Amino acid sequence: MPYICFAKIDNFKFMKAMVLTGIRQMEMRNVPEAVIMNPLDVRIRMSAVGICGSDIHYYTRGNIGSQKVTYPFTVGHEGAGVVIETGAGVKNVKQGDSVAIEPAISCNECDQCRAGRHNTCRKLKFLGCPGQAEGCLSEYIIIPEQCCFKIPGKLSYDHGSISEPLAIGIYSVKRSGNIKGLKAGVMGFGPIGMSVHLAARDQGAGDIYVTDKIDERLSIAMNEGAAYTGNPMKENIVETIRDKEPFGLDVVFECCGQQEALDQAIDILKPGGKLMVVGIPEFDFWSVNVEKTRRREISILFVRRQENCTGTALKMMNNGRLDVSRMVTHRFPFGQTKDAFDLVADYKDGVMKAMIYF
Image (cartoon, one colour):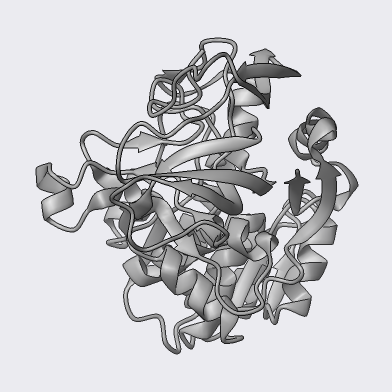
């Protein structure tokens, strides 16, 4: 079984990978070791991988929309590690470099790439996405040089892995426009919601209102400077926010992929407000109230991961502008990956981000 599209069997050498074998089933297997095949490829020994909500979709449901898992399959895309070998044409990284991995492999040739929209590349291959590329929950991966970002300064492998969701938060805020002084909402304070919140604060947003169903996450949000935190399971967050902001919020980021959160976001937006849809839902169709959106001229923008923000995320962590020290709440060795997935899937123990170490 090839590891990713750039790998092959090399004299029957094997490496360990944690593979999905069925719904909520996962096991450690020996798979053909990742080897360099192209001159611009880099071989990386993995050090840390963060668990993302999309990984959990594949774990608990076996698909995200039309992207369906064919078992066995390796997920994982928030990764960092050490360069152990480079192709003959690689110039920007060398053996021994610690790197963060950008999991989106764009073709650099299609109309989207030429327009600077690598995140919507028509031939995109994404680590841990069925039908595209195996993920990075294995000892080694092969990835093009363009996807390797040196981890600067004293940043750790945690920072390298977190640069992936953090880049999405930075891009989401950037895509929303000039947020300086605006009143904002973040619906869902998981790692993506926290990344949005950090980026919005950095860009000078005014009061930020945060909601989540996990109280421990709300405590983190309050410590990160949220003006308000609310649990929709325990209070009517729309009424509460409307009492505090009777004219409504300027922009709301939906970060949990829940229809209820989208509805609440629309209800707390002011006329002419902007809804940023960042979360990945488990269903196929969003629903919006025509009267509430059309009559109030609500703008709705969808966010497809990120574009050219990984380096920015690393730089902003390195210079102290963005502090992600509260994001990783749970840590597991590689052999206990299934325990980590179960923890995240079931929202146990107030988990924010679970990290796997090799």
